[in-house]
Image (cartoon, rainbow, N blue to C red; front, side, top):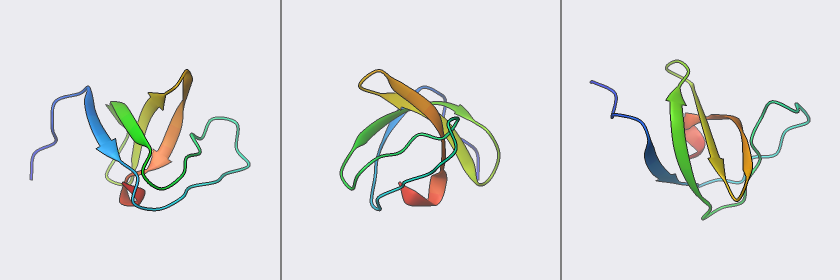
Amino acid sequence: MSEPTVPFRVKAVYEYKSEYEDDLTFDVGQIITVTEVEDEEWFSGNYDGKSGMFPRNFV
């Protein structure tokens, strides 16, 4: 399956909290703009002035 063209928007289906400063934490329902596909497991993105990496299976 080919990757969508960035940027694109996704909606969080699970809460994600992390202690790593490079990670993007969010609550269920948050709309996130994906700015980079890191690999098959991680996206980079942003919302409300926050940015970082997050697991793609949470959205």
